[in-house]
Amino acid sequence: MTLLMVGKDVADVTARLRALPWQAAVQHLVDMLRAAADPAIPLMLDISREVIVDAAGPVTYASPVTMSRIPDSPRT
Image (cartoon, rainbow, N blue to C red; front, side, top):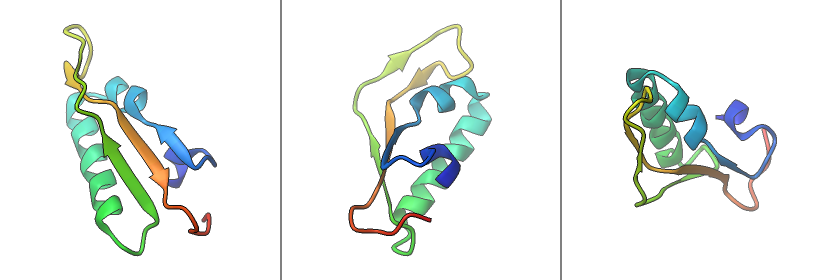
C-alpha cells in the first residue's frame, strides 16, 4: 500500500488497476479493501460510483479508486 501511495497522503490508483490483467486488478483491489478494513492500517479507500468502460482494455469496466492516509496517522 505504501508503494501505491508514493509518499503522498492521497493517491488515485485507478490507472494502475486498469493497466493490470483483470484477475490481478481484482486481487489488488481486494488487498486494498482488506487493508482499509484493518484498524491497524491507517488507510481509507474511496471507490467512486462512476464507471469507466474500456472495451479494449485489460479491465473492461472499472470505477475510480482513491486511497488516502487517515489524517493524524504517522507515515510508515
